[in-house]
Length: 188
Image (cartoon, rainbow, N blue to C red):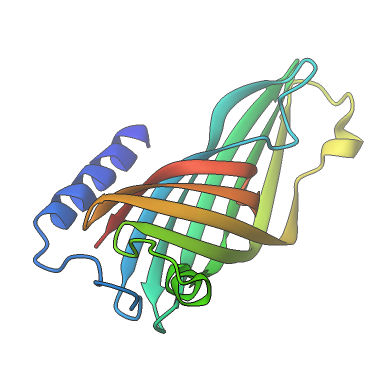
């Protein structure tokens, strides 16, 4: 699985670097295709007590422009934790919508933010969280039964582009499996 993920990311990076289309110039996200992948911090499972992380919360999303300021698309996230004699895994999948407001900040504040380099945005994530429990004994199973739940997650973020098609991002809020998420973004 790990080799497959690395191969897919490498392929996307090669396609992006050779793409004749760069990120939409200026303020128009209506034709944008943004792939982002990263890892999250500060989730409520595994940072205290006898728990330890097996696989850190990792996530990926694809956003497709539908309006000058709006992008939408799917996301997925995965994490796994271990306890003494137990394991817990999380898979989140759903849709995220983002409103990109750097151009509006420039207009409202008479600012000079370089909209081709810095992208401020607010996102809403909605989807399902699948929780799976594994144990080597039946002790304590009642509180850890497999389940699925619906969640909504508001997020505020910023992307900084080093080139037209490559940048880094940071997000805060109730994201996919974390309150703080950092990673890389590619414009396809």
